[in-house]
Amino acid sequence: MATITMKELLEAGVHFGHQTKRWNPRMKEYIFGERNGIYIIDLQKTLKMFKEASKFVQDLAAEGKVILFVGTKRQAQDAISEEAQKCGMFYINQRWLGGLLTNWVTVQKSVKRLKELDDMATDGRYELLPKKEVIKLERERKHLQANLAGIKNMSRLPDAIFVIDSNKEQIAVREARKLGIPVVAVVDTNCDPSEVDYVIPGNDDALRAIRLFTSKISESIAEGVQLISDKQLAEMSADVQAGAEGVPAEGSGYATEDAGADDINMEDVLGGGVHKRAVANDEGEVPEAQHTV
Image (tube, rainbow, N blue to C red; front, top):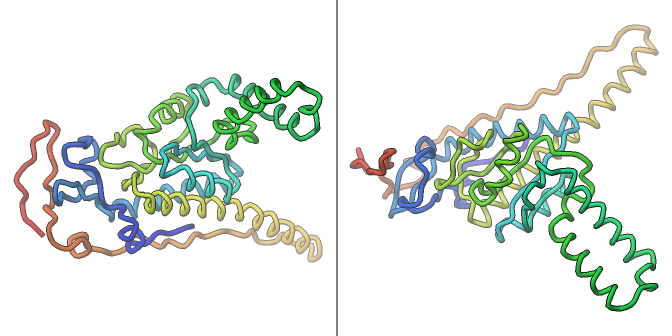
């Protein structure tokens, strides 16, 4: 299973949340403290919860399930498309079309139209049409390509979605929840973690943080897919051996190494200036910090 280290989290700036005035009280349990008006995310919880999310997507991939990557904010677009393609999954990185999940049949009609226009552009049919008609069709194709390229070959609804910024992708999260599709999401201090099944507390705005989480999730999925191939080979080998010896062969198990969360102290890691537990209550009042690191 893909693992993540405290050093990688710190270098990517994962621990930086939003300003204290822009926060969701439900994120209180994932906040370590406050420094210079910025909430600091508890990286110990990030490590633990990322491990759970990583294990979940790996297990899904090992069962041949489909995972959809979603991230339409500018700094996430490249990472989402590249990492999704790297692990053989699908993605939405330009615009989430309302009803993409809940109105799947209609969306599939648009996908079919995109494939038809792609065929027309490559098989010579464009050459038989007037120039104005070709320009019109090409404009339609580029529009569909921008919104649907990442799911063009996705023949059914996904079994889970991985989201960067559950606030920005609120429509996608709600559609998934309505259909009972699990949501794995990077959740910042201004988001509502109760809408997400597998919460990964962390900075969802920094390019390096987005790239780090997306690449690690992609690695976990790729390893899950590899387990399918390994298991099939092991079963074939076992069948051959059992046939040759006339005795049942022992099954092959796959034990995942438990890396465990880093044994760290957030106070030592972040240094001075952090007011621990200086987190506002549900009424928006910030109690006096108990001590300063």
